[in-house]
Length: 376
Image (cartoon, rainbow, N blue to C red):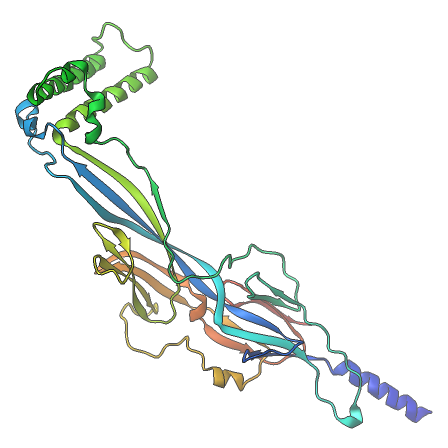
């Protein structure tokens, strides 16, 4: 009876001590039915490129400009050109399709003499909507999903804003009846020049308080002055020509794959604006990734390459990143359009947690780094 009681206590003690271990391996083909796959994150850059379109159009009375208004600096030919204004960067996180692993709870090996019925506990795993691992056996508060959407190498979106609709070609809308009935272009130009001088005199009289009827308050005065300035501008542009501009924003997405790297991000044409990097009509704008220790691109082995066969031979509890900051620059020739430091997930050091039966860990889904870890 004492012997049977001893064996029962031995079995119960063995059952309590044989806790399932957590294993993580690289995905190669099908994963076990009781395993879950997870991705490490990848940083995607969203580049906002702001450009400006300038439209210059000569005035319909340009040949009379110096004679009637004394202005020689005028626009003589129609021209449309584009200028690069600014480049801004931000990031979002997506799953790295090359860094995918599976994790499972594996029961410890026992001999036939010690065979016991061991139930492998279910893993408590939390993922983002893109399959990036957030926590193992640890409850974390819901957070805003950082992955948002699948990364695309390059996507272009164009938005226009601040566009002025008036142009010298619609100048007929400000022609008076006398101008329309004058019968000759020189007479129309003379009447337009006369209108410019009349507007200037009216503005001067208003500022000096010499008008018979003065505005009642400062707001009314400011409104009248604005209208006078605008009318003078329109009539003057009949001689000098008009210059209009509008702004466009193109959004490109780019995922750097190695460090260091120096890649053509896009090209910019003074006629077309932002064009594809294969379109040689524009000058190149480069995306530079470099270590913070140097600004010079040197030939070195890509530190982000993962030897899958070598990794597959080692079993660990979890793969994660030790994050590193890198320098990011956007360059137009020698001109720096943008420069800053970023933590880029895929350039972090790939690390391994040892196999454990007590693994409780929270990960940062944006960088793949460990936020907190403890034993249960």
